[in-house]
Length: 357
Image (cartoon, rainbow, N blue to C red; front, side):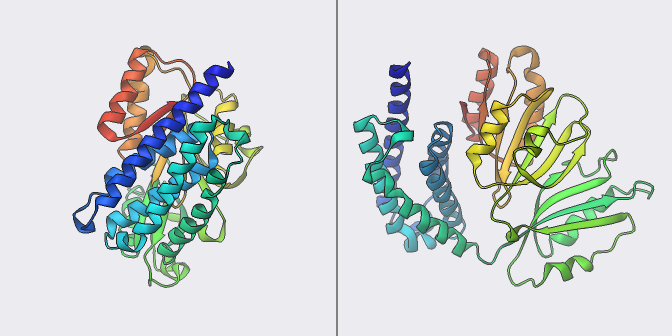
């Protein structure tokens, strides 16, 4: 067992060392940032983040998540590359040295105490501050409206609200995704307010609609870290699972037939995935979770993915990727050839990494 684990760790070190080497070579060669495609770098860093998350390497996972955000920001404003080029190269070089040292010593992650690895904390602090600085004018809000189903065409209120909000920022992560759905009397969404738009409490007061019974707004910036978890069940569900209420502080939640949508206060992503994978959930098909202020979501498949149930899982995942950017899919259980072939298809066509947890 020890040798198997050693090989798994060595494989993790080696693959990511090669990925970091490739990133360094590419960045060194960039002379004209406006001609560079940083989306390829995001894909590579996402692979590092995915593998480090699966190995529960919190240090590399946290740092690669920050680097992914930096490259996404640079892709939208390419002249920022010149400002951060040498910081990125220094960081990647230190990550490379850390992987080289880890690979050489073949050390289990839980016992790592080598200077090259510990030095990465400095880069985490630096890029955490850099991301905060680059995002300092962005404000995030959670919005939930309760609709009056007795009003004719009440569901059109969702579109009207979105049109109103788009004047001031970017609404995203809707529930339900189908805006014309008449079964649900709720509409939940996340909202990013554009800079220099003023007080959002005053802005939302301007919104009037007779089909709206209640509006709830939460300023996410008042909390250290908020995650959105969506549970997709086989059958109707009317409450948040005890496994969540017992382990996390709930900010808000809502139930929609076979979907349970909840927002929790938590800053340890590994704790969330451990809780979801190590607890027993009845009739649960899959789960998605994401940090509130990030676009990318993570999908967890909690049942065996085989030929007989694959069409249903395909439909569910297709629904998710039509609305959200998916960074990876984690799974447990046994999957047959058809299940693994589907995951490989998603990787090849949508750049969605996958792995067993």
